[in-house]
Amino acid sequence: MFGHTKTIRYAVVAGGQISQQAFMPGIGRTNNSELVALVTGDPVKADRLAKLYGIKAWSYADYGDLLQSGEIDAVYIATPNFLHMRYAVPALEAGIHVLLEKPMASSVSEAEQILAAQEKGGAKLMIAYRLHHEPGTVEMITRARGNEFGTLRSFVSVFAQNVAEANSRGHNGYWGGPVPDMGTYPLNAVRNLFGQEPIAVHAVGTKTPDRGFNFHDTVAVTLRFAGERVAQFTVSYATAPSEFFELVGTKASIHASPAFMFGAKVGIEYVETTSNGSTTHRFDPVEQFGNETQYFSDCILNDLHPEADGEEGLMDMRVLAAIERSLETGETVALDPATRARHVRPDQALTLKPAKEPTEDEMISIVPQSA
Image 1 (cartoon, rainbow, N blue to C red):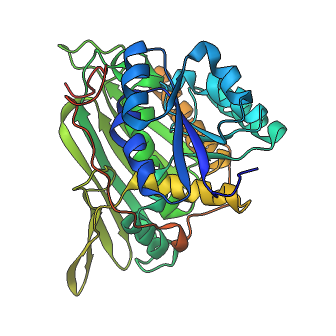
Image 2 (image 1 turned 45 degrees about the horizontal axis):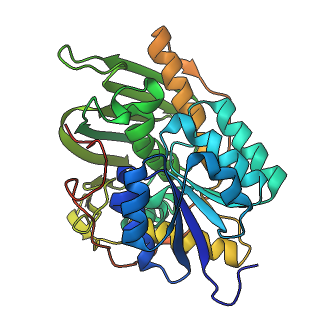
């Protein structure tokens, strides 16, 4: 199926900021993946990005033809969240593998439909949790699960930035806002650090008076887990940048910052504190988007089941939906008990060198995310 080159041929669906800034440069660092196509509704992007990368551009109207063309093996979908299902389902049903940006969709029902399409078509589905392949993050998860920090008691995090209302993230309601976009990072981190799924959620949101967002732009979330464990995180689209988390166990606490971001100069770092003092653990920057693509292509080529599969995406989705309900009702929302079949493994950590990223000024026809 894959010829003699042993590379997976990818089409990028949507040429927005994350595609241009991160995925399209990053795939060039892999040795088993190649970029061959772009799907976009913007003729300027179609022309200039196709020439820049030496690839073929397709319109959204011709997406079905692309899926049947025999020219691609997989798609990377980076549309706004509410369009994920529209492009993931036909790809999976056509037997095309899907690397899908997080959050998985814009409702639990949509996520379940994507999973159903994956089961029907038999292609592989991976949710783009890039930090599942970042060495520092994988080490923290592995050590936490190995009881190196003792019995885990609490998790606290902030992830915030100043987002422009004109960007697609700034005006598409709750599912385009900070909780699904940024809250997925601390949520996914604590689920994997604890190795558990939350059993109850409470959220409080505020709206900055002089900002034009059509959602709560700052949200504080409290999660309760079995075993008397608690987690709290705050996300915002209306503040100066901030990103960290603190995990507290009975033997040690760790403070991670940077904890969630990517970039050629961004290396994940954490400080471990015990009764004997503090130790800093620093990790070199890696090509996070190339790492996840390298891993997914390896799964395709060797018929392996990716760890961050549709089930992992759905586990986050059900919590994001519960946060939305709590914001609407002001009440604590109980979650049905759930368990995750797969977990992050140490050998998922990869160390591809960071690719050079274009600046916002160098990217083509984007509405900058930063305010």
